[in-house]
Amino acid sequence: MVVSLHLQVTSFAFFVLILCLYCSNIVYNVVAMKSEVVDVSDFGAVGDGTADSSKAWNFVCSREIENGVRVIFVPENQTFLLHPVTFNGPCKAKEIKFLIMGRIISPVSPKTWEGLDQAKWLTFYKVSGLKIKGSGEINGRGWGWWNQSCRDHPRLEGCTSLAPTAMIFESCKTSSLSQVRLINSSQTHVLIRGTDGFIVDHVKITAPETSPNTDGIHISSASNIFIRNSIIGTGDDCVSIGDHTTNIHISHVKCGPGHGISIGSLGRSGNFVQVQNIRVNTVTFKGTTNGARIKTWQVGKGYVRGVMFENLFFNSVKNPIIIDQNYCNVRGACKELETGVQIRDVVYRNLWGTSSTEVAITLNCSRSVSCTGLLLQSIMLKSSITGKNVRSSCINAHGAAIGVVQPAPCF
Image (cartoon, rainbow, N blue to C red; front, side):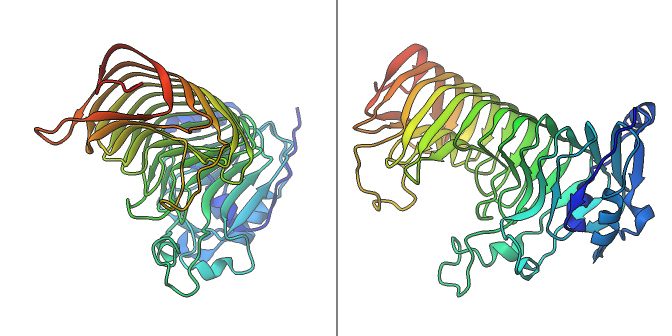
């Protein structure tokens, strides 16, 4: 069967995303499928870390293909500089594989984005059946953006609140990202948006604890997303779940440093929130500011429901369990309102470890739209400080406790 592939890209940057052909069995599988393997070096891409190879990549990626699967390969021991780019679909091939062995690096200077969308570095749009895999590295080299961040440098003339997300997957159905390493993104490392069916597996994401807004993975307007077997340590949330999300599964993840795994913040613009069927299972939090967190703005409406936090371990976490229905990014700056996002049917089961603060369980719920259907089951949290005790704090929270729950519940 002849399958053609038409790839429209705006710059090389995007294609160095090609993940590593990282072990011999992958090579065998590629050959067995009779796929066309394209080595970008054969088309003029220069892996010296300084030359922008956009033209070579554009040429490679615009070629027609006569096989069902296309494999684009970046060789090992080489570093490819990629400028901001969008990889546009839909594509005719049922499956597209990017195999990266080498390194992909971003331009260091924010000036590179002048006249471009500052929120994007490597973007995949409407590309279904996309498989990005390999032992290569994608390095956002974000320190130029961090040094002009308005959050950290509010008095700096020309400071910026926006910075590029390293990888954006938008409307990419039945796709995956696996085994690759992402480091030092200017802002969020991976954004999954408007997508049904996406797997993140065996990925390592790292950035300094002090780097601003460098979430590991953010999910928005998406369903059937699986994040598993990964290590994430950044300056913000390890995983954050935004609005209009359903059937999100996070399992076997090591989180820290960072802000934990967060549902929210939600409802900031007064919109109607819809978040349901979230499962967080077998996660280790080490030295994070939060563990299992839900945060919503009073001005919002809608619901968060059907959430399960299960088999979580906390190692010196400031807020192991926290719901904040009165979230505000500036303390005391938000007026109390009669609206709110309803939070109900949230289960915390088999959670244990240590809290670095006195309050290990915080359930701060709305006076007008209280939290209901909360369940605490088999929880054992102690202080990480010898001789100190921990406690629970509840406001307008309603639920039940089953089995041993320490600290004692405050419903």
